[in-house]
Image 1 (cartoon, rainbow, N blue to C red):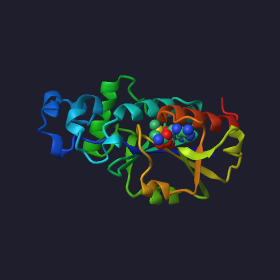
Image 2: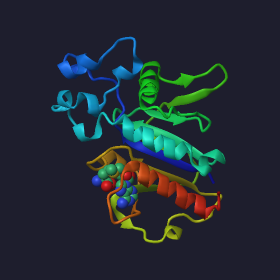
Image 3: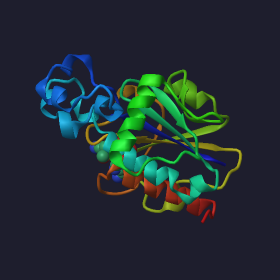
Image 4: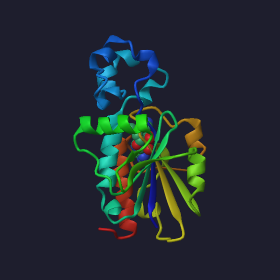
Length: 224
Ligand SMILES: C[S@@+](CC[C@H](N)C(=O)[O-])C[C@H]1O[C@@H](n2cnc3c(N)ncnc32)[C@H](O)[C@@H]1O
């Protein structure tokens, strides 16, 4: 019954060594400030020019918006969302549904840098963000009876949301959304599912896709 959402190839990473000496990076770097350790296209654009896979990197703002949409949804408040992010460097993290993500972007960046440095975010009593040790295939295989949907503007167009999810308590719907700005899924991601769906004739921002797909699931189960 819970919806399992995996945001994949998210552009969240610490500053790569190869650009640490670039003036655009040095200018914004301060060793005591976590947020400055995170790669951010808005600050490091000129330094990123020669980075491989540049289109998918340095976009913590995309993940911030997706997380606010997903964790703030009625589905999550009802305890029916299981949320993971997979980073461009193949790290996977599970978010505690009760975590309160900072609305302030700089504070969010600080949290993400701390996560990547420490490997998890914990309080005395609970894990707020925990690493998953394994790859995406292993993550998916954890769930019984998985139905894996890949969402892409190039997928099969769904023009009625009722076609997407059916009420079936035995089924684990796993939805995969790209946490990046442009470009397409890597081959490893494409191979995770034979079902690729589009929910619009337009290419949508990741957070719009996240919000709408969660809403479709809420409608299926009449979660308000
Ligand atoms: C900005 S898009 C990435 C660009 C890519 N060309 C695309 O449109 O799929 C970020 C993510 O939002 C989701 N997305 C965007 N448009 C979509 C659509 N029309 N239907 C379903 N998902 C979509 C996909 O998961 C995509 O990876």
